[in-house]
Amino acid sequence: MSKHKNVIRREPIPSKLVNQVFLDPTYDTGFQELFDSEDALKDFLDGVLDLQRDDRIKSLKYSFNHSSRFRVPQSRKIVMDAFVITESGRFLDIEMQRAEHTFFIDRTVLYKAFLIIKGKQQMEDATEFKSLIKEEKEYRRYELPETISIWICNFDLPELCGKYIDEWAIYSRNSLENGIKKTVFAKNKYIIISLANFNKAASEIKTATDAWLYLLKNAGTKTDIPSFGNKAIDEALERIRIDNLSDETLKAMEKEMIAKEEIECRLAGAKIETRFEMVDAMISRNYSEDEISAISGISKEEILKRKALLKKNI
Image (cartoon, rainbow, N blue to C red; front, side):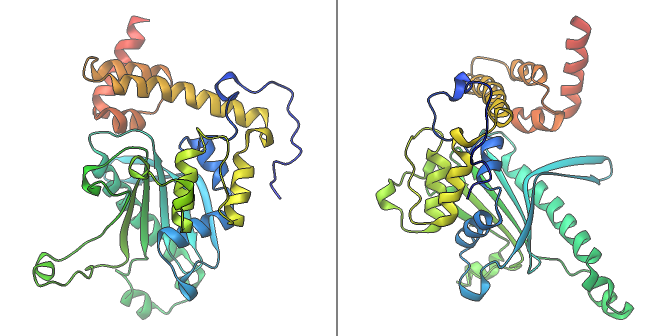
């Protein structure tokens, strides 16, 4: 049963949400409510990673907006939308991206680098590793855990060639030329999903993966979403049903929609508006320098200069 059942609200539903049945899970608030369940994440990940039988995830731990800070050499902070650790020692980062930007692929690689470092640190902090004898620790000095980056994009990527899901990995050019398609390092993997390219009707859904993608793409606009006979999806729908949510959650969702709609409107008009106008809007909405840089493609140094100029002109 949903933890949101019998919620008491004292305020009317915000105007932005009044005609919706469900939260839009492509926004942070909706995404977190949708996947705030071990069963939901296991079902989604088993499908996306094509895990079968004994390979299926038994248990996992997760957190949203997971913040980590690294020195490379300057201190840099990254925030993962969903950070997941499975009982078998897989480390996963699940990102939900609404807007395309110039350095998208650069960002996926950067986040993966941080995910690998984070996974390595936690692997060596585990009780199992600490209990090893010194020689075994030295032997495993360069061992890395399996890390998987999953990027769910609300836009098309030319690299997907019109498909809605793809897997990126490291391959040897020589092996490929000899017809060998096996990845060089199987523990390093990217799953890239384009909701823009996912156009299946409910009647065409055959797999758990497609069921979750149908929900992600359509929950924000449709009033009736089937559960496809999947208990985890049925419970997820209850978690994002607006009637089940608190005033606080709905306010957070409305604020996020207003802010992102303004930015996305400016992005759509980027050909006739300058990128600094977009930056000004994001600064006014208190976006971080990292977020502004990722969306606009403008360096953090230039953004800081812009902030100083705007403050001076107030």
